[in-house]
Length: 231
Image 1: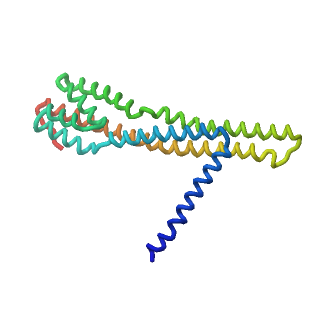
Image 2 (image 1 turned 60 degrees about the vertical axis):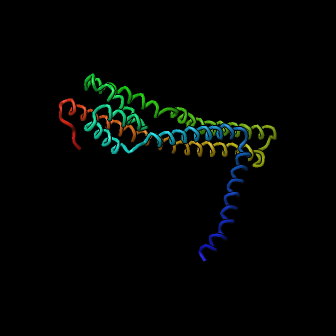
């Protein structure tokens, strides 16, 4: 009985979705030419956001497991084995680890400098494209407000030509003004959500990098002192 009810509901849900899409297309067409810059801002902004999310998800690893593996290789087989583990692991944490290990023979200070330098480089890679995403978050409502101003100007032009104030004369201009504002704000809200998600993801990866760097330095200090680190 439940399956039969679900089958009956499916055509209604599809019809509702089609109605929503048709309504959005209709409103988009009614919004005038300034709807296109808003749409372009949404498409490009989403493309940047999805690219960043995919890249960050690929860069995100189980940091605790990775640290344990590197420390185990370091204690059992030495620096070369730990470097091999880092080379075979993707992500900024592994890259920073490898940069530090490559400078181990120059002293702890050299390791710290290498970690800081490569950490800054990895940060730039993580944040790549965010300035453009932020730009489109700002541009979308600006385009919407510009359409609002143009729509209101069109409404007053209609009043001036007719020499009379009639709802039918100004309705189209006001509609354009409101639609462009609505779509511009909706676009900015959607992109802002993805922007904040990406920023939170980057912050978590950076924290993992910092914690991992501290553990690496501690392990190298113990190794150089002839006291293998323990968990």
